[in-house]
Image 1 (spheres, rainbow, N blue to C red):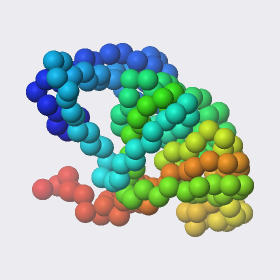
Image 2: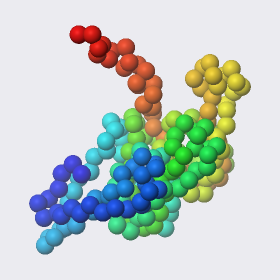
Image 3: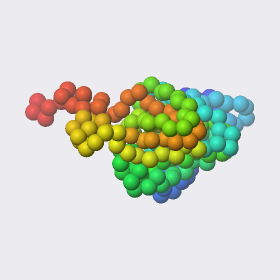
Image 4: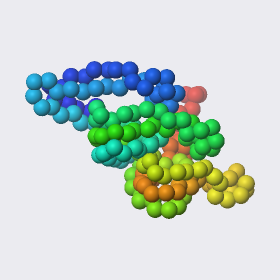
Length: 189
């Protein structure tokens, strides 16, 4: 929440239990309710980047573990195990956030956001995936041989297959951290 009308009330509730905790998400979700008159809240993402809004109508969207920002009351937010091989080798969490039902869903990226329509096969670098719709199957694989995988910094991709949408981000945190590293304060001042 960035701003809210004075008649908005916030309640913090435990939702998702241990499964949300293992994704790195908080097990607590804030619920906002207008009392006595219509109210409005403004939301803002934690990461510097774009935010997407999707209106779910019985649909399901899978998010990477840090992408969830907010949702309507009728959207179910739960963790989904993506499997040891997919999760470990994707460079992301072993869990995805599964958002389904009817209502508003907001998620964010680090950097710019690009929405892609997929029909058939599509390949995306694992570090750029933010979200994708149900109906897309994926597997993690290498794009080159072992030399590419270990020496070039490129190599692991998600190969999507089916019909749906994929949202990707234009930036990744690890390259930014590596760029920033030489400018860190030294311990001997």
